[in-house]
Figure 1 (tube, rainbow over the protein chains, first blue to last red):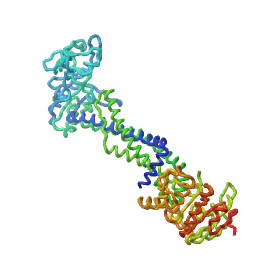
Figure 2: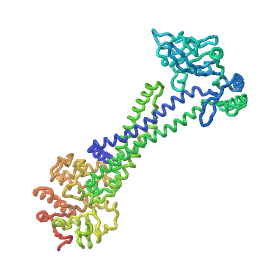
Figure 3: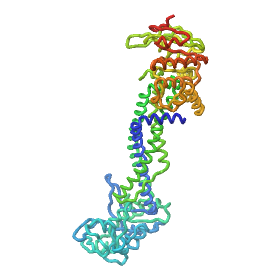
Length: 404
Length: 220
């Protein structure tokens, strides 16, 4: 065995450049698959981790499919909210009034989602994850306080509203003009990003202001937290039924549990990942052809040597295993290089995504993926080596010896 | 030990049939040193390939120790080449990526001999042909005569009864050629059967018996 390897090693060494290119081919193929899988796992993990934190949440919206499109139609009433609150197992039910309004700051105007909410309910909605922006350090202002029930014409704003929307930074105690009325900024919410990034570009005001100042009392969303996650699906179904009853409509209400959102997300990711891996497998097929070509060339070049080996007593399977080993060694080296390149690539890409899109993703490299990568390389290599190796083993010794 | 019966080999060249061998009947006894002499194209190499189980006849048979080689499959033929035959070629045909001792050990590798055993034996064989100081040299670092001596050592590695030389002195100068023939004579004295093909009468003179070939026939 040791001698087979040393023979193989010398044959590969003899054609260094060619072997290196072949190895590069399989490296690229394996690296692509491994990088994509690791990034995929990382994305899945970061998204489901955020969602799991909200697993007890049911989001209720007036939503239905019409002519193939999904949209919101109508709104809820206080009666709906009360009905939801009366359902057993519901811990919190929070009404949110959402409306796009024109917001002006120092002459610049943007349409922004204004959310009317009872300030005391904000903790129930956001839990621990939404906090005021941390102090930016020495010389920067503190980012205020949370919205209070007795606040009048006051608002708490998302991170992007404060820092990105307007050419001037919006700070605590600055005034924003919402639909013609000035609101004082009392607090700035810390950066959310990722799955909660919508919070970053919203402005929160009290329900009372929403009704009296902006003249909007349509509840667009009821945000529910349940006591026991296991009952979430049943409760969601009951919420839909109660509200539909109130409005005497079918399919008026959509109550979506985060659990089902996680499942949906996971299945979407599964499909996405499968497609990406299928695409990157094309490079593996190309690499396989590269190996086959290299071994074919090697067989051609060494025809005479094959003949000599047969003349001095090599059996067909001796020759077969010699060339298969060459294919195997090339592909395993490629596989290992591919794993290394794939891991580096995955981290580089997630780093790039983090920097570019400001989301928290870390590539997750699973050991079984690496082992699988090497195994795939080996199998691909051996299969592509099989044809040339068989060709070599079947050569007639006298013709091969005569070949110069 | 070896005999052929109406051994015939026909090569097809397009539409033409070329008789490389015509009804060759030859008997070679155990322990004999026979030279087959003839000009190029006389069929002597073809005959040697048949006897050496490298090629299969169109008709007729080769018997080795009374076994008809036509009845053997590729693997069995490979075993005969490995165990009973030692080949020496005109072009030496060493594996150029391997050094001398590894080349000599190669037939033992195919025979499944343990690494230490075969390297030790290969070294001894190289010492016997006077290359004890060249065992780690690559073929490219050896002269023609030295390469041919490595090839002889390789031919002996599985201790064959028959040593076959196809123009073994064809690529070396006369003195080296004679030295090589001396080695073969020595092997013959050890009791091995030696079959050498050559076009050189002087070389053939080392053999105990000479057979001349012309146009695919063995002349009497």
